[in-house]
Image 1 (spheres, helix red, strand yellow):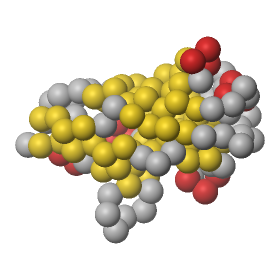
Image 2: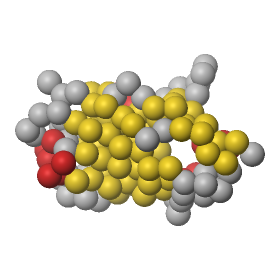
Image 3: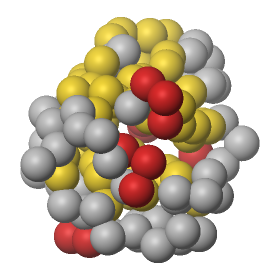
Image 4: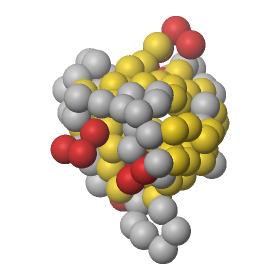
Amino acid sequence: QVQLVESGGGLVQAGGSLRLSCAASGRTFNTYGMGWFRQAPGKEREFRAAISRSGSTNYADSVKGRFTISRDNAKNTVYLQMNSLEPEDTAVYYCAADAGSRWYTTPTEAGQYDYWGQGTQVTVSS
């Protein structure tokens, strides 16, 4: 089993930055594809970014050029660097692990992930 714990959310003004962290338990972190999703009240969980076992990345169109996903396998941690934040980015952000991920690809569908963190709130004021 894998436990995921997000941190780093908070309140920031438009144009500001935050870095989210997701710490994972277990000794097999390097075998997981990792993703970040967001969810606002009453809405579906929405893909933001993913990173594969090989380090290949994929981003939702609305965050390209602003967000960067990275991983540190030695620390069992995945990060989401969020720059040029906009009010539309406001949501609860979740990290997720895909235990069945292949080397070069990581899914963009929430239903393909096996483990989820509890979420961290990101609020961007105008």
